[in-house]
Image (cartoon, rainbow, N blue to C red):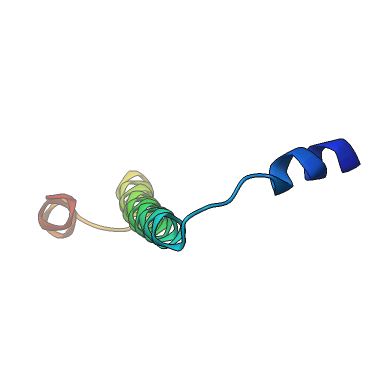
Length: 64
């Protein structure tokens, strides 16, 4: 483990690159979180429809 730390310590990262990379990762994470939230909502909607908890008139507009 020390050898790895020693090898990594010889490299430096420009602050501009670090900031850019962190921003890209934040945006990517935000997009993924939004996608998963929407996917969960759609799955819940389909489950409600399959269980007969909502009608076609309630289901169709939300599905779109």
